[in-house]
Length: 306
Image (spheres, rainbow, N blue to C red):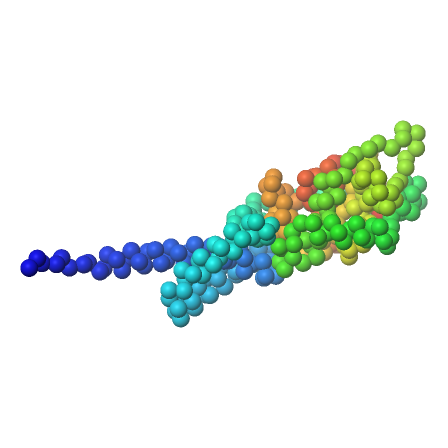
């Protein structure tokens, strides 16, 4: 009889453990950002830690699965991969969102800077509280966020983008979706050289989103206010732009992280803002690629509070 060579089971056990732990790690890396979508933004001393909390929650969940049903990690991994593939064809949370969420956490904590605008708004706020100027009066008369055309337009396009992040950032996703639609479709058209014309937001919507900087500001502020945002218009030398109210420092940090996450290209390196007495406002100008983009200049001469 031929002798049968004994099988070294220790090698197979070691290989199995390595593969099993690798599979667990891959499952955790895919599961954690998805869990993070349902965790409110958490800010601790300026650091965004909600994704780290999601990683810990995912790790504990996998430990529980491995403890109760050890072989179940394989179908869990296959299920998550299947969901990612399905989402790719239904325009939902996909692998690209997973990678972007990890990148945005690093960028939000280490890469992006805050650039407070040091101008007359911060140094001499009383100088910009007068509404006697003709331009200020003219623009205030055209602001209208209660009109049905404005409201319906705003609601429709607040749902165009970022719905997969609504559980994470709530109303912020609606504001940023509307900003993205308006700024990606707005086309600059000069006024008459003789007279300055302020178009109502209804007119700008009906004419295909064409106009100059004050028309854009009136449109953006009216539309955002119609879905619950707080806005204002800042008049600087040769230009006007809208600003969105973020809230206090923690609210600003959440808005900052949302912008970094939802506007990944190009990478957001700085967030420009005004701050006075703990209130934070970010730039929504059509000249910027994302909310909180650079200001054109700091020669502020009027402020239109809505």
